[in-house]
Length: 215
Image (cartoon, rainbow, N blue to C red; front, side, top):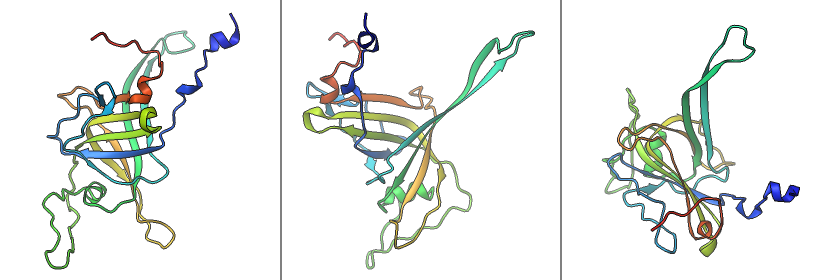
């Protein structure tokens, strides 16, 4: 046995998310059952979902805040039992495009019924005086590689809400941007808050240590 044998380094499994998108849909929309389909491992159709457009080059930040509770024992130097009592998954990103879906999320407004003026094209809406918590489906989709080497990395959030928005700057130096933090909540029907998915033709061509299911 050598160090290299024990270490079992596989540099080809090192990933970067070279580009990504955030897709949103009303709660009544069905999430896809899978990320990819067929022998080519092509992306499935995201019917009913709409993209928030270009995300800033800071990309997407994911955080899992875990809180635990310990039980101290008489004479013990450490807790004799530790339980995880809370886990909150959040995702932060900055949208660069001023589009209907982005404005609705950033300002916590349902803009489905808002229409542009027939003559001027102007759009207007007022901020709610008693804002409510709004939920939507979300797909966070990233890609590494191109063509036959493409690897897709995704998070499905069946019940997501905007929990924080950052200040917005109007200036000649920076684009008008919409920085948001999303908190994932458990969907009582689907039974999860975050689903992790990895696939694509590039993924299928590599050995990640997972056994393939029998047909």
